Image (cartoon, rainbow, N blue to C red; front, side, top):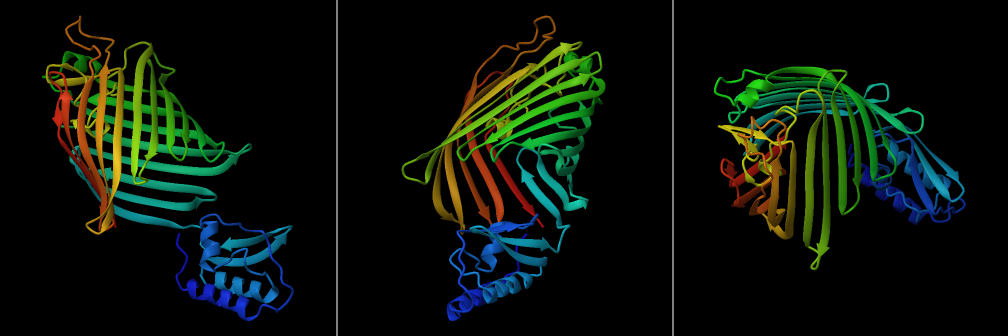
Length: 422
């Protein structure tokens, strides 16, 4: 949340008072200045808006001028200066304890076409609880996400949250409608600035319906609903130049059909000489397996393509049965991309890149007596990418050409994503 710009004048007044009145009161300097009590405003922003630094002497009149400056922003109910050792604590009580926003957005994606969004969020929607709601809708998909999150809900630094998800898709390249609804309470802990763990125990309804009579026998056999509890375990590590994420799901707990789904993702960026050149390597992979009962259905298998595997259409890679892509119970996508800042383009900073993507989706528990080829086969593509903002609207596009593919794979040589909110 930004502070009011008129405080720039107050910051100048504070600095001017310190210079014009250097001998007023006893000079007192501190090696550190820290903000306490702030929940929604960044401490650095609070200090900078009034020019509060360790270079200033915290005499009585100067402190009074600093307090007046901060109060004039209209963001605080009270401000106090409390020294402790060699640190000056600026203790604030924020006035707006329930900040939030409502936004209506429009996206265009070459994979999904026009997508409308409505987003709402509010801090302290309930006492000490953040709440958010997002609606998305397009010709082939609609969804709703609702989230509640409370920090330090339990001892030991554990946070608590509740996620609710409802969606329905009817993609024109698939011969069925997929409806999914989940509700998941979870706990989370941030162990440091880089590592985060989440544990969730939820309930999922997963329905395959409106199956075409022309569908593969594989999909016809998988039609119907599965409703049961599930367990989610997640770990994320995010450093300055590399990241790693792992998710483990156990779907169908307490039922006769239990499916394990594992997802892994890693990315590493190397800064090259000159400084505006970077090389990024990324890897994604997953595996789904039956632990009890029936095999993973198409809604738990992996159908890769689109922005995840450039050069191929969404859901364009995987084992096929007739016109249907059945995906695979395992997948991997590896990417290497060299990016360079090219300065201003259309009045904004732009970045161009060249990439190579390779990957595959393979493996089915049921190959209909060996009539479906589910073997591992590498696919690959090369291309160019461009990212920039046009009028504060993020734009990302790429062109790609497959250099190795399999019969039945669907290509997509151009991709674009544009997103804005009002």
